[in-house]
Amino acid sequence: MRKDRLRNIVRVVRFIQENPNTYLREIARELNLNPATVHRILKEIEEFLETEAVDGKVNLELLNLPVLLRLKKNVTVEGIIKYLKVKERLKGI
Image 1 (spheres, rainbow, N blue to C red):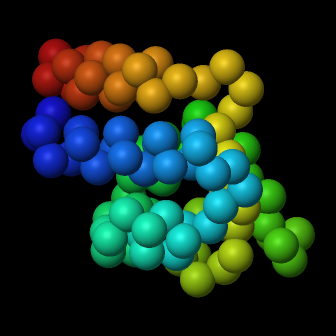
Image 2: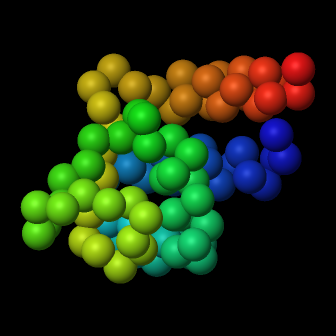
Image 3: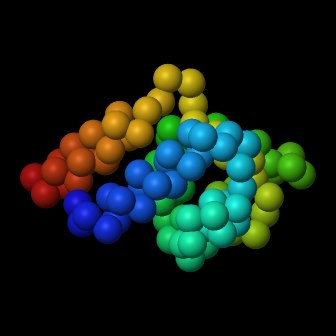
């Protein structure tokens, strides 16, 4: 896993951890990341996220919909990173 990609994943997860019920655009703005980069990260870690749409429709495919994001209970940054590293290794097999 490339260091800059890993660093961005950690930054996004920590931001969500410290700011539950945040939005994709808020994450991008606060971390000075492109919204598309944040979107890719969210898609990669979506099984660790709880989402709630303001309009009742949750869809991480649509960047502009206001979807509240928070980590599921007992999920940690370290756990997500370990999972992603193992997943990447398994792809190489």
